[in-house]
Image 1: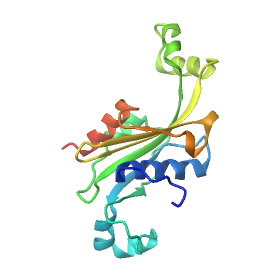
Image 2 (image 1 turned 90 degrees about the vertical axis):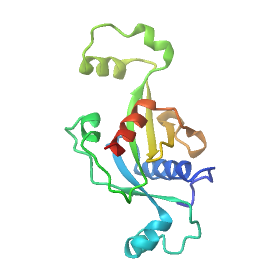
Image 3 (image 1 turned 60 degrees about the vertical axis):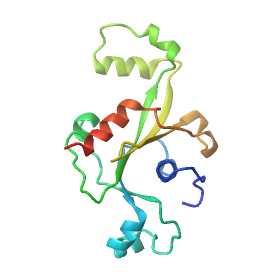
Length: 180
């Protein structure tokens, strides 16, 4: 994607490409799962698919190509769904983009005790300091991780925060999809 900023690593570039794609779809979207495949391997082993994805003329040989997977079942909790995934060897990594409500750390002390998941979600949704955030998290088989966070109120490519440890729980869940 032409507007994706240049980044230091292929994994960071893939995360930013997925973030840009999700941004183009707008907010209030379902979670989306992507396989990450080595671009050079994809061109060599699946030239028809590479052509369909517009990769046949790319010069870069060290990139990762995100391939969106089938829609995640709406009624399935994300952690349970991820536990059912097993990737073929051709997949170098995977990524997930998901929207959530978050509270600043200062709000943690005011969380009422004893709330079940549904009541806690409602409490967070009604909290005046809540922030809507889109998280894109990616992991590779070798353990590398990257994340991008975009706040709805600062929805601009220059306001995307990246880092390897921004969403550690989700990164762990994605990494587990590669364990035997």
